[in-house]
Image (cartoon, rainbow, N blue to C red; front, top):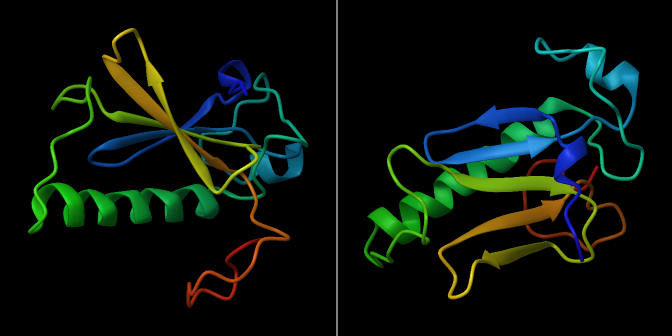
Length: 132
């Protein structure tokens, strides 16, 4: 499985993550303040709105706080530092999400998460828009 990084040209930054994504169509892209007509859309790999990606950012930050700052105190993923955020690609993947190691032995990694959860079961998220 490969991640189409070359078409995931929009970015959403959080404190610890850099999320890359594309829009599913030009009408959706035009609503983004960072709209750029030269960036391609992807019906297969794109998202319908920026809020979907922003919500992922919130979830990842919540997990970071729980697992790295909370009682569990896991180590940061390899390659992540104060100046280098953990990369997340929002695109069409055949799972809820996948972590890919990079290098041999792994010196870094990145995460790919689904651009839509339509057809997946409910996950307990109270947001009525989840999965759209």
